[in-house]
Image (cartoon, rainbow, N blue to C red):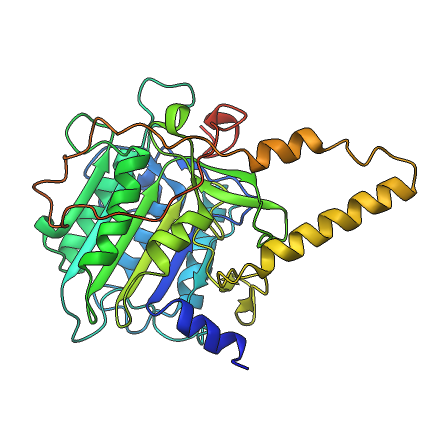
Length: 363
């Protein structure tokens, strides 16, 4: 019988590393004066605290990151954030169990093509509008091009600034899927997301806290959120072996938004294994169902109403009809990523129960 690590290698062929701005239960923050981080800021004064802290650490270590380990990077980020008055705990999650003292490498030596997806959503005109996410995107773009040698023509920018492709749910999901189709062994992929993040009730049984983490696209009120289970299935698992992927998630509840099997936080001695990782064999859902039945039996034995959560169950299991065709379809015609192919069905979710400004990236 294959070990956990062997099953992971079979399930996720690519090497995927994600730096998140906070744990699943923490909120992210916006730093209105990124001059305190002393980094090049081509777009103004406002910037996301996590993005600004990471870029500051990267710039301080030069274009060659051979001497900067994952541990050093997260520790330095945490120090930067504390000095600015933030309590966020940056976290690394990975598709591989690694020595966290090894160098942080965005572009390994001898790599092939370098491609990126950069998302910045300010939710312009909506309740919960943010101020820093466009600046995050521009700062990241500047770093990728000038420090890591990315060709601008190979970077897909999704921003609600009226100049770029809109970061709708459909466009973000299509970008994920098409990046997996285009990337080949030896290639490098960067993905960054700056915006709102949220949580939704877990129905697959892979979350210890009972909640899935989500990305909140521009059109979340109409098309819902992007759930971590779906990102795992459409982006992480299909990525080919030999592709090196680095992801930066600067949003709330982002600690495990890619649902990767190994995690590490600043202050840990080594990586932790996510025992509930979803291998796609249905075991997590089965275990979750059994747990639910046990809880209902216990409530019944205690004289409580075992059907008290039926309404909640119905909401969890309800399937929303396939969403309408997005009016932005076709905007990728000039992008370096090929036309979209059929993708696996995703779980539509209702809008967040509270306005985004009440749940993440404190203004």
